[in-house]
Image 1 (cartoon, helix red, strand yellow):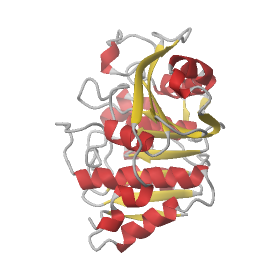
Image 2 (spheres, one colour; image 1 turned 45 degrees about the horizontal axis):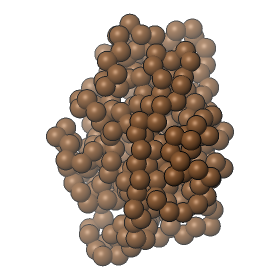
Image 3 (tube, rainbow, N blue to C red; image 1 turned 120 degrees about the horizontal axis):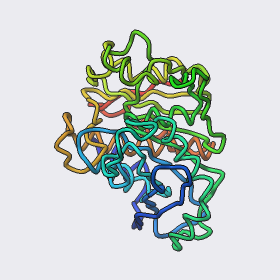
Length: 319
């Protein structure tokens, strides 16, 4: 990677980060109260917020508030407050498999994010170093894998609830932009028979009303045969099947872990590549920076650096 494309060249010098967990938000009607991790730069005011939804995967603790440190630390060190819930699907909670919504709790996951936004005062109380430092008008959502599905619903994607046949509309107007990392694509005949039978909520995903600006990140080697019969291009569906404005970052030779975004030195990452993770860090940061602060040059600078690199790690297209 050339010097001009390193994270510091795009995002500036990192700030020290504070991280507090668990902050516990009472959640009546939820199987357990909602626990979150809050990470933020130790200095600065009017800080924008990223809600980060974890995926599933084999490791016990990555699918909780304890995962995704490579992204969380970078985003927080460069000016964002990152809030990570432990969704009910997390292995760490050991919930009864008969708990309503099991095993993936698709609706509850989106409702967790709305609950966080409703309780930002409580989060500031739990993390007094943040008191008065949040810019509540600048909120983004990001999610990896199943977390990408959660993020897509908050950005406006719809599905038919398999329990009652109604259309689920969980769009959250307080969220102004999003990042979908290796997110699921459309349903129907794109799914494996097993997924269609066991996770029917994925069968009716509709991106046509996902109008909130978003960056879709997909690996061109992310086959995901346990989910889809389509191959890697399935993960680009949220870009191609939704209205603009959207951008698509295709990472070359990347598999589902996108180089290792879910944690440091994670054994289940099949395409471990620190430079690829670095690319995801700086490009997602730059995208959200510009979307939340129109006129900011970060996104264009990051795109230009990617294009100018003699050995680029990916490509970006927009609509």
